[in-house]
Amino acid sequence: MSLLLEIKSLRSWYGASQALFDVNLEIESGQVVALLGRNGMGKSTTINSICGLIHRYEGKVNFNDLSLIGQPSYKIAQSGIGLVPEGRRAFSNLTVLENLTAAARDGEWLLQNIYDLFPRLEERKFQLASSLSGGEQQMLVIGRALMTNPKLLILDEATEGLSPTIRSEIWKVIKILKSRNISILIIDKSLKQLLELADNFYILEKGKTVWNGPSKNLTSEIAQKFLGV
Amino acid sequence: MNNNILNIKNLSKSFGAFKVTDDIAIDLKFNEIHALIGPNGAGKSTLIKQIVGSVKHDIGSIILDQEDITDLTDIERAKIGISRTFQVSSVIPKFSALENIILSLLEKNKKTFQLFQNLQSNKDLFSKAERILIEIELDNQSNTLASELSHGDRRKLEVGLALAMNPKVFLFDEPMAGLDEAGTKMMINLFKKIKSQSPILLIEHDMDAVFALADRISVIVYGKIVATGTVEEIKSNALVHDVYLGYEV
Image (cartoon, rainbow over the protein chains, first blue to last red):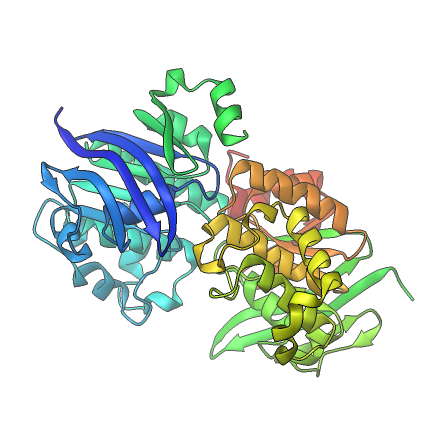
């Protein structure tokens, strides 16, 4: 496996207030990596920094040996990072089909692959995204990210606010993506599901990476200490 | 008359040909948490909007504390004691956590917005707001702008705003979404404590939280209530498993 994403000593700021102090994280291609931490510890800020959505950040963020620091977010997306952001954010005034094709790029993932993964999207392809249920919107946003044929898929709370049946549908899809060797960085509160899925874990506390390792090393003592679980 | 603080009867709403709520009857007793669960798009949030008055019903009635509020506006309903949180966070981003709470307290006390300029001297208001921040475990973020709070902390702040309003009923729309496990535990304990002050109608997809909290659960599917019962009754209802819970619960 080769190193896909390398983050070293990442520091980020919102205005004058520093949110990240020393984040370190690595993802090898084909790996699923889970980013854990309590609310407000810097998980989403780390993702926003990777995607160029933070105005001020320093350190090393290399993706496929390309430095992402200072790059505009559209260039970062073009380099092969697909983001499924917290809170869904489908393009509400576009149809399902338009959402899926708006940012599509050539590659293995074609429209029909997305429809095979989420048959409901095909049934609703001419509906406006705003008319979809929350679960369908989440499927759409995952499909939209896959249509960019990313080398790394980032899922930020992709199962949040979904009914139990839809949530298990989304987890099944994430497992399918893993089986197809798609590299994934995932934030989610369902530790049980993550323990079954992720190859490696990183825990953030107060803007710093304080622990990392595989699931077998993530003991209940560590979960209690850093996650309050 | 009865021991219900909120009585909803025959409530229906259509958008064009689509019936989003269909002959809904639901009540909320004193000292109760009544959870409303159902698939995404089933009509839960629309029902909450009808109760607060931001979406007008087509037919039906809503009685709050023996007063018919069916024809009142959303502002009038808020004034007489309905307080909601939103599925998507709605705090004021440019205000700090403390200022957001203070604004809610001012609203409750019917003070004008201009008074906000002179608040430094109002120790009573500050200490009330600080107590609420302690209750929702945000006291260490008191001076952080709401826009700089994490998603989970903004959800906590929303509940704080509802607490500041001291309403007759709380309507909480997915308050656990985005909270970590410790935050969820905090919220569960908080809800258990405040339900005797004001009963809670709770929309939530976190079933561990719902089962830990609910005195009764109603299940809504395609705008209709298909089951109401205790936690055990709902857990053993085959239809509810088919349409919502699945088979891993």
